Image (cartoon, rainbow, N blue to C red; front, side, top):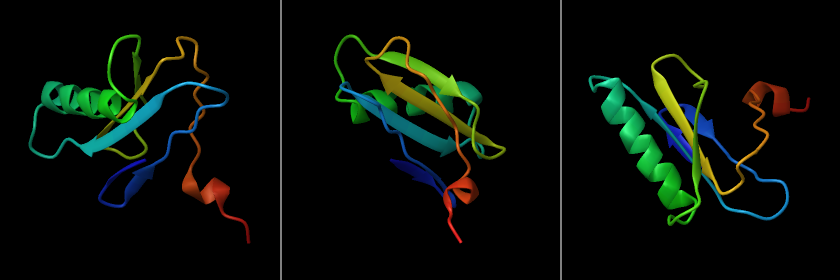
Amino acid sequence: MSHSGAVVVVAVLAGVGRVGVDVERIQGRSMEEVVAWTSQEARFKAGGGAGLHLYELQPPAPGHVLTLATDQRDAAVTLLSGAALLVS
């Protein structure tokens, strides 16, 4: 799980494996700096070490960077809006 302001992301991995995710606002920093930061955080949250693959995903809001790390090379990634998860 990660959050940046009102943006919250949760990563769930079907089956066995490691997964980590990070989202950050760019806000006054270079894109390279934010991508490096989210990559480091996602790797850490996935347990670190060798064998992790990074995916820079479509951010959930403008001005953000979203990175996922997993040991599953062919991970299927589905992005859902929180509104899609609400049941009335």
